[in-house]
Every structure is written in C-alpha cells, then in structure tokens.
Image (cartoon, rainbow, N blue to C red):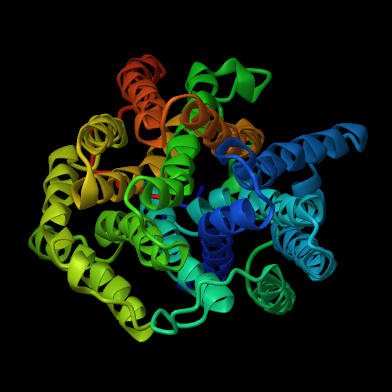
Length: 478
C-alpha cells in the first residue's frame, strides 16, 4: 500500500451518496403508506406491517440471489461486473419495481403494491452491498466511518422529505382539509421516483466512480484474513444479529407510530406526516453530528460543529415542514431533547463500541418513557428513538467487518441480508399490538436495544483479542 497521505475523493463520493438519499426517501415513505393501506384495504395492524415485511425481506432475498449467482459462476458477481455497474444495475431493478405501482393503483391490488415495493427493495439490496463498503473505500480507512456517517446524513435527508411528499401526493396540502385517501394518487410519485432511478443510473455509469476500488483489491492480500470464510469471525456473526435488531427497532418504532397516534391520541392520518418526518429527521440530526470529524481535524472546531450541525439539521426539518404549510409550534421543544444527543456523542469519544452502548441505553430509556406516559410526551419520547438510532448503523457495520480483510465484501453481503429485521420486527410489534396494545408493543424495541448494548460490550473483547483497538478517535452513522 502506498505510504503517501490518502484523502477522501469527494468527486467520487458525492455522486455515490445519491443512492443513499433514495433508500431513505422510500423507506420513510412506507410509514405513510402503512396507515393508508390499512384503511383502504381494511387491514389489521399486523397485516398492515406486511408493507415493511415485503420491503425489508427483499434485502435478504437479494443478498441470497447475489450469493447464489456468485457461487454458480465461481466468482464474486460485484467484482466481476464492477462496483459502478452494480450500482447502475441495482437502480434499474428498483425502477422496474416502481412501474408496478401503476397497475396496482388502477386495480386497487394490495398484493401488487407489495410486489412493487419488494422489487424496489431488491434493487436496493444490490446497491447497499456495493455502496457501504465503497463509501469506506473512497479515502483513508481511518475516516471510513465518518464517510458512512455523512452518507447516512444524506440518507436521512431523504427520510425527512419522503413522508411529506408522499403525504402531499395523497392528501394535498396540510391546510386543504382533505381526508380522503386515494390509492390511485400513490402511483404518480412512485413513477416519478422510477424515472429518477433511471436518470441516476445513467449518471453513475458515466461518473468517475471506480469499478474496482484500490482499498478492496489491496484487502484481498490482507495477512490478517487467514480464515476461510467471513462467517468464521464472531464479530460478524454477532454483528449480523445486531443489524437485524437495529434495523428492526429503527423501522418498527416509526411504522407503528401512526397507528398509536390515530388510535390512542386521536390524530387524523393526514396530520401524522410531520411527526414521521421528525422521527427520520432525528436520524439526520444525529448523523450530521457524528460526521463533523470528516470536515476538520481541529478539536476546537469539532466542539463548535457538534453544536452547530444538529441544529442545522433540525433547521432543515423545520424549513421543509414550513414549506409544506405545517404548524411548527409543537416541534420547538424538541430542541431541548437534541441536547441529550450532543452530550451522548461527546461522551462516546468517537469509539464505536462505546457509542453503541451509550446510544442503546438511551434508546431503552426513550422507549420506556414513551410507554409510561401519554399524549405529546410519549410522542416526543418515541420520535427521539430516531436520535439514538442515528449512529448505530456505522458502529455495528464498522465493528462487524473489522479484521475481515479479503472477506470484507462477503461480510458486507451477510450484513445487508439482515436488513430483513426491519420487516420481521415491525410485523412482530404489530402482532404484539393486536394482542395487547400499540402502546405496550414498544417493549419489542426495548429487547432490541438490550441486545445491541450486549453486542457493544461483547465485541470490544473479541476485537481486542484480534489486535484491533478502537480507543482512538473513530466516528459513525448510517
């Protein structure tokens, strides 16, 4: 490896993060589709979570297809066709999925709607397998986690905007008074989204993104990778479960929130979108905070940016909702909750294992407060879970693939496979809600965070035994 200083290749990194935006836009928009489909198709809470199941299980199916093709052709599929071509192919697959929304809306078919979401996520599976390690590879490995944090911040710009645009497409403006839910109105935004997928696929195809990143090629000769498979590494096995429960609690907290606000608090479906937007904006707030180290090495400036970045992200949320004619008054108090995030981020000192432990404990406390209170206090508690989920993806991802060397791509594929937890745990919480209550069902999330706290404690010892120490500054966020 060259000993000269390596810097982040921003010309390549910036076009890459466009796919992160799409993942967030679609995933968060599902939270608006769930209550719409529930009423339009007369579904139970458990049945309505099939939206999340179809979307997130597709990641697992996509990863399995990828591994089968690689096995049958006796070579890694992505390495063969190249990282850039793989991204473009994934976008084309997702675009094909959006086409199904047209006949699904015209015929009022719930299964066809689910099929469309499934195919969209199938394309996302390939994109995720490529884009996450690629984001780490486009610069020095020591700042790879920061780049993943920044990409996650763009992802959450999509999650903040997505629910508002889809809600506007279905209900019109917040002040229109429209409460009708037209399934046919869903097809236009998704067809436009499909066109955007194709446009970005073309742009990425002709971009300067590398087909074979040097960092990945070099890792194939890594002397630390003496084991025969990625599955021989305990940090990956435990990390796979970690990704499963992390995506599960992140998605299920938001996807069950509309039903809680409607049934227990009396909100109209059309008035819930700003709160779903706030939940996903909370992840953006946390990830912008975690990315400050990517911009400067000056410790004094980092301390200043740790206060500026989260409130700048919060300002983006307020601005977007103002443009959508939503009342901002209920959200100003949230500025105080953001202070908890800032203190937690500073306490972690950039160590991903320590950060994972601190934020998991705060996630448990937020859910317990939400379950033990009612009214807007509970809503703020549940939405703050987004703040404490914000940095968990890169923490888990970084810890799980550390030391894998030439098995890094394989390990990445296994981790992407476990994104199915977003669908399965959402369905599980929906089922628990049908049996008990939506309020009580958030105990499912408490269990998820408890495992993540355990993983944070356990993986530190595993990595230290392999000679890997994260006590030096490292930052992260999905």
